[in-house]
Length: 517
Image (cartoon, rainbow, N blue to C red; front, side):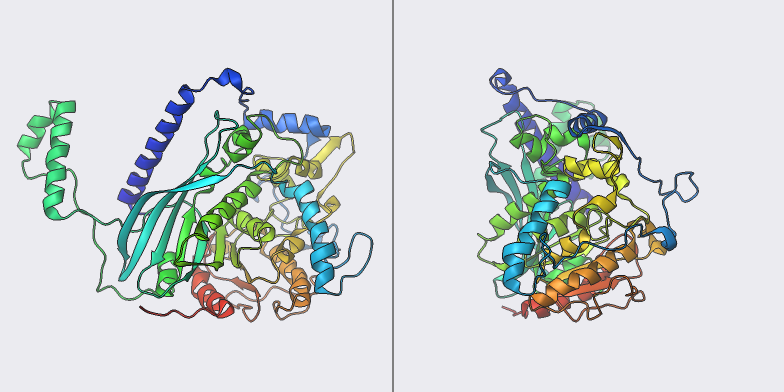
């Protein structure tokens, strides 16, 4: 992100935060339930009390030299190698038709994920009103775009002590015939290349800015007189029309625009804070009216996915967007959230799931690197429903539970995305995509999910669905012939190197061909 872009975004966000604080100051808080304030440890402790848990197993250390280091021995990585049967109902009936999947088995899997892992989205979730803060005609390299900085104001009339304003930037190419596919990316939004004032206008801005600074601090007058030609505000470097066209090393956003796609970036933290202390605020706290969660309430991953769905609501109103061709992308914790969004909202047409680890594409039952205890027993428990803590319980009224006791696993989460195109991406440990993420566990889950894709008439990885015998392909060997895809690039904790493979794969499956204006 360009420094000036980030500065302007932060200034806008500070103004919005100030406005929200001022509004709260005028609210009579005595009319509403008291807004609870917890530390993350206090919040986790009250959830343990609700569940009857006395002690949690701590998560392993990522430091291989630490006494409690994570396991990286494949010989002990599979304490319960048999996964839940994705195509067998709870009553033991084999699922052999798409109708059985949609009407019987899929709802069972959704129920288990909602109850035990990600939590339920409340029925009384408020509406979001999207407002355009900035509309700018810009250039990204050679490509003309229209960029909009959007704020999704969540209705807080039922509990005005909590404000939620979803931060999003939408960028659409103007040199192609619409409507266009759009990739929704979870991250920090910024306008790509803000249009800038002309030189005469910039001179007027600098004169007014100098006068304002001198009025604020008279000592500035002597400094400006000492450097009479100095301009406090200067123009940013403009678009380079002579730069080479985007290639596989270009930023993913530029590759998308060059292929005729649009993109939008949504800020997860503007939906729900990424910590346990924030669970009585954000969208979770707003709906709960500032009270702590119950065990089946949603966690941050489901909340971020809900926010992505509200962004999709807005994209459905944009004439230049093909709302039936909106994908979702994220890396690491945001890769988890992207997969959760795909699983629970079938309007998302496709997904690029980057380095998602436990809680995402990696098998929960595997004990390799990141463990269930890493999420439930430590500072990341807020990603999940409260019930997830049960699977890290060392002492509890119900005894001890582990990941092997979960009724579902990540192969079924991937299967919930079927038959829509789903691309699972990883890098390599040598470049920073740590062994902790358990790339092998994600590959096995992707293999196991394939039988659902095939049942629904889509192509899977093109290998058998025997996750116990299939071996992860070599790095840079993409399995990209079907709606379910896998590729491990030779970079680090990012999915950027896979975009040059993802875009043509996705465009082909969406039957999208860039049409110049």
